[in-house]
Length: 477
Image (cartoon, rainbow, N blue to C red):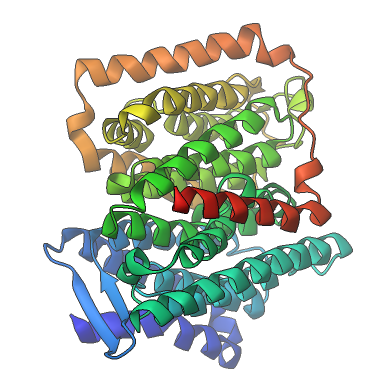
């Protein structure tokens, strides 16, 4: 299994750099890599024991592949597969498919790292590949958004690298487990880097503009998998170190409430989905023991929603309420919205039930409010008018990609089939109905717009500094 794992790790990078030699085969090579990852991720979910690869004995540089990694790897594979299929007939160059595969490979690497220095390398490669994908259209707007992302990302990773050096200074090892014996400064700096990279709480306010202004397939990749490279290490550290667990859960609750607060009031479809990503990543962190299943569900549904949003006649929800969309596209939109709201028969239901069962008592009220806010937010999509409009057609490759993701939502429903008890079914249904009522009676007519001041470029680093101060205080406490 060790040889297979090493081959799987290296394959995306070998193929990615070989695409230029065979540009006509770029789509097929990219597709092959995603299918290999799909098989590997499913195999890890079935393994009974983790696989550990020791790279450097004296520095704690280690790779760990277990069921938690398997969920994240499977998410990466399915989202990448769907994006490749979506772009199949788009005429994108070999350069674009190269970046997809390099991003895919570096995200996979982040999902198996068990030390801070390997993770640093993976996160930096992710940042470069994401930047090149964001700026692929070469418009002034895309270049500005990409540079903004790169600047924030690099600043966050500078803080992270200093924290990693402090961990090594304390333990003579870069292993995640060394964070428990590291000084306060190391924990605060590493957390700031990962919270920013993962788009968590106020450190992630770079995310809405970046994800909403990128091309549709790039938005799907960023929200579906790229941000999870920053979330995964936080989950892993919470499971390894008892003292870290409350801190991770606290930021999970904060992200869930902050994100959903913006999502409920947002009238731009792509910005709404981007803020929802902030909120849903909070659900992933709120219960680290079951984070893998929620990450899988969120990756599938959010990628599907971004692909669908890119095929709507308008980004403005006010316009969409008076301009019926094609019934087949609305049906796909409704299925994805039902899943993220926690409706039975879709994996979002099992993921939410399992997450709620693993919350600590102090988290319960806040996370139920976040779940209600999610139902309110996606009622905006479910109650859009629709009708048969043959002239309104989706882009080539759209249906193949969306069907892969929606099929994944139905199939993943079996991961936690124990969720199907009367009590577990009734509670989410009540939450959804209350959300629909709140939307129809209050939020449908709401004209409130939350200020974007904290999203402005000049404030992003300042917010990171404030979060760093708060982290110092929380770790000391």
